Image (cartoon, rainbow, N blue to C red; front, side, top):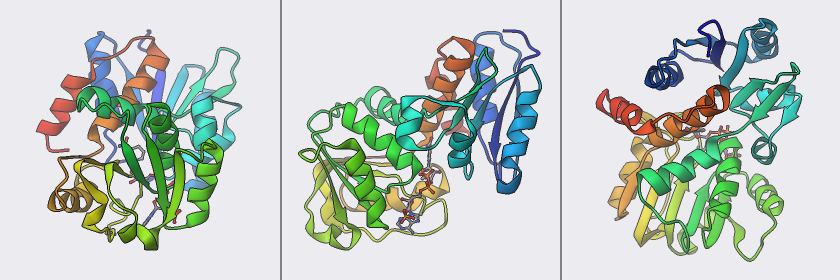
Length: 278
Ligand code: NDP
């Protein structure tokens, strides 16, 4: 791909984003000289910033992070099934006809991180999903399709959990419970924290009884934001406790492949980020 093609990540704030570093590392694997910028856009400026970026004929694609994923979905002309199910987009791509396509790579990225990097066979797992926001919606569908035995969705605002379960529409496998009832709902093989509590500097009050004897606990956050949940998981006796750094690298790989038609090797990039303490 020509070095004059432009890519970006939009967020607010954006300085902390690892996306430029990840995409540059992928590009080096293929000898691509990549123009990938981090663009800080406040919510009121997001739509204009995206339009401005894509008005340049060399701009091909953009990643989107907090707090713009719903706005990115809303301003796109076309939506993949994954984006429609999540109601959010983390990837915008300009199609050959000039239209903007919205995609969401979060769900597939989590499943790939769990199954390939962490060698977990999800089939037969009784799974608890904490949260029902954009990431949780993407993750719920992906876990369901990856064959978890049951999926119990618990969200602080119960109506969002109910709406997600209704959308999946498999009441025999997918149900909701109230947050206040967590102490009485038994134990799980897989617990996925898809709330933004850690990112917001808030802690979750979770009973140890949720953690089954072979449980894997996974926080979509990484770095400091995952510390609290992972400490709880270890104290509760989880067999494995993982943060979302691997998911971050995998979702970036999906975007990279979509734009460049080449699948990067994620492992060296993941290991490099781990080594640098991300
Ligand atoms: P949203 O804002 O869409 O959703 C936030 C969710 O967290 C809602 O379910 C909300 O509940 C819940 N929540 C927030 N604070 C609390 C709290 N104090 N107690 C209980 N629940 C709470 O965010 P996203 O879904 O986009 O992101 C969720 C997290 O996942 C973020 O930390 C984000 O950084 C991370 N993420 C990581 C990715 C990766 O690649 N590793 C990719 C995508 C996201 P309510 O509905 O009641 O408000």
